[in-house]
Image 1 (spheres, rainbow, N blue to C red):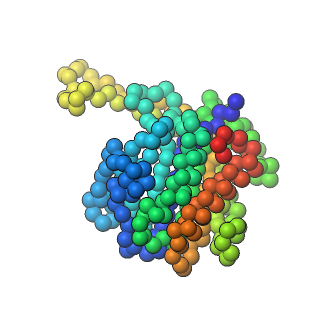
Image 2: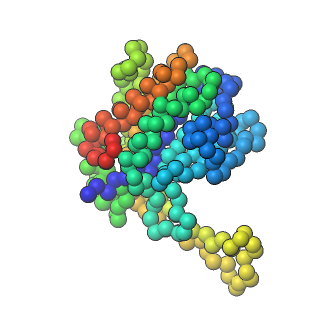
Image 3: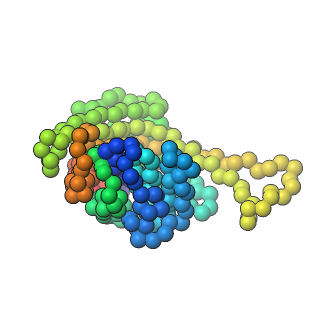
Length: 261
C-alpha cells in the first residue's frame, strides 16, 4: 500500500487588473459551498486579504481574496486534540471530486469578476522515518531522466518546468511545474485553559510540545502564461480542469498511484 497521500489542493485565479472588482471571501464561500463558513475575517484595509474557512466532509476548506488573487484551498481537517502525526487527506476520492467540482463553479461564484489567468496546485507527501528513507521515496517517483544520486543528504529540492501549449485553446501557453522535495514538518501543541480563562498559577507554565516529521513530497503547480484578454467563465473552467488533467498525467509519469486521480 502506498504511503503517499494528498496534503493540499488549491485553485487560483488572477484578475485582469489589480483594481478588478472581487467578492469578499464570505460571499465567495457562500457561493461555492451554499452555506456560511465556520470563520470569517474581513479585510482590515483594501490591501489585506479577506478569509473564510469551514469543513466539507473530511476536508478543511477555505478561500482567500486579495486585490490581485483569489485562492480556494482544500486540506485535511486539523485534529481537535494534539496529534502524533502530520494531518493528511485520507479520502482521496472526495478530494479529487471536490477539486473538479470547484473547477467548474469557481468562475461563476466570482460573479462578474474579470479573470486573465488561472492556476492549479496539488501536493502529495509520504511520511518517512529518516532522511535516507525520504530520499529513496522521492527518487522512486522522480522520472529517470531527472534522477540524481542521493543517500542521506538533507533538504533535497528539484523543480522542473515543462511548458507546453494548451490542448484546449490554440496559442495559449501553460507552465507545468513539478517540484520534488524532502521536507521537515514541525507540529507545536499548546496548553490552552478551558473557556479561555487565565492559566492557573503554577511554578512553571507547561512548555509547548514539539514534534518533527520528515516527508518526501511532490507538488504540481500548473498555470497559464498571462494573456492580454479576459477569460470567459467557460474558458476559466476549462483551463482549471485541464490543469487537473495534467496533474493526473504527471502523476502517472511519476508512477504515483493514488485512488481518484
